[in-house]
Length: 192
Image (cartoon, rainbow, N blue to C red; front, side, top):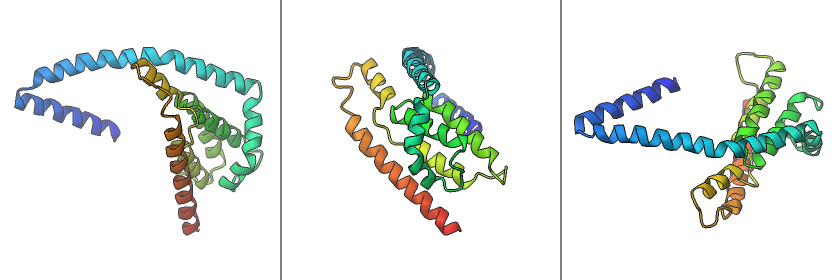
């Protein structure tokens, strides 16, 4: 469905630019922005590789399991349907740790593994469970203590003070997390 929307928007933009005589603008935009997008990927790749490697080292060293044990009292309240020894809780804690460091790319593999484990205990395989929905809310609105990727982008684009967004990032993600989890709890309670 999303593919159809994107193709439709691109098609409409090209037709509109032809009708208004701005086809050269579209051509220049495609060529210029494709190159800048590729450059952005190459400039961010070392940062993503570094932090993904650090997260893998932390996982192998058992630091993420320790972090999981620290978060276990909170996670058991957020995910009451899960057994306290479920592997999904470890992956959820790892995902939270990566998101706290602003490393969405490093958090993705942990999120996928967590969803896979949550699907294993899901009774209705064609419907998302309450735990899956809660995790999705937690992952999407997750608290970010150090927005590493955004700071990296600000450094690349010569920001005068690339770290000035840390406090606002913490406040915004804290509010979004509390709001999302509260709404998730209220909807879950209403549906019972």
